[in-house]
Image 1 (tube, rainbow, N blue to C red):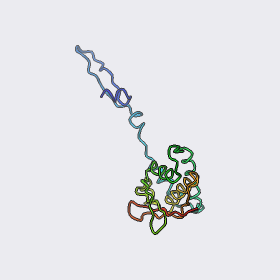
Image 2: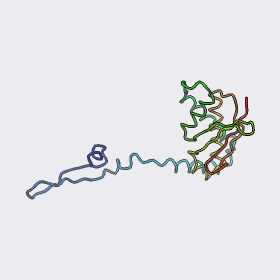
Image 3: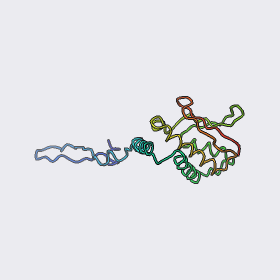
Image 4: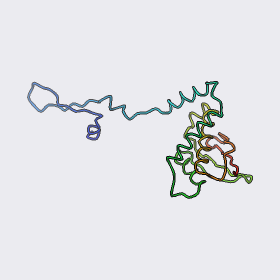
Length: 170
């Protein structure tokens, strides 16, 4: 209770009484503080993704370009100076975003396995839109970190929790 009072979520005051005896301590919720920390970014993302998906003037290449811009911004914010290898920087950036990436080689082609999708609910609703943005994010970070390859394509939902980025040497 003391913690809630100190955070300003609950207020306390003494009961006003006209009778003898110690007044009761009354508690009340402060509504503005109760919901101050609650956020619903999932709803916001679903609204925006739905709008973008239904906007005929926005083409896939525009969505990829938007992702590339954000990928470059993310790379500027996360220089990873302690990691000398560009490929590791790309993996670290996507790890920080929650994709659980893993580098592998399949049929002599390098690939990045994305074992988790932090955009899953939005991607399930509108995979073309969301996955195009993620492809751009990958390309933007690859360019910014000067990795020795380009992202050729992103195959979403190869398995329910797996997307695969196919790479090619530059």
